Image (cartoon, rainbow, N blue to C red; front, side, top):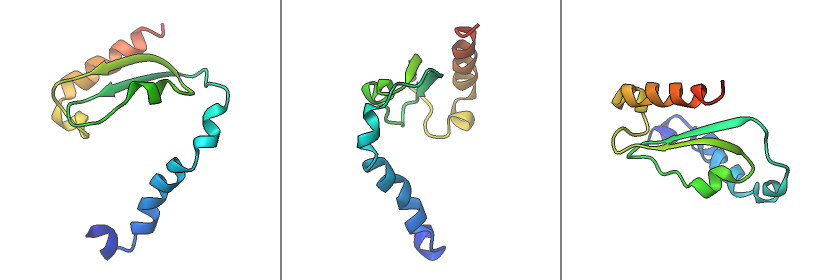
Amino acid sequence: MFYWITRTAGSAARFYYENMHMAADWGRAPSITPIGVAAFAQDVAIRRYGERGNNLVHWAEFDRGGHFAAMEAPDLLVGDIREFFRGLR
């Protein structure tokens, strides 16, 4: 409802449209930048998509928390961020 009232539905949907039409870019060379993923209980993350085209060096899944992990499970988020960067030293 907020998207319609504020007339931002088009710009909000653009993200999904662009992601659906970037399949041709999946064949590009993988990034060398190290990537870490924290998948919290209410989020959906599929590892094979994260690995595609990325240098995935850290993957963690948690039983609690959600989309707003910094508010819902800050202890898990901080610990995971520290673990990710510790592995890069």
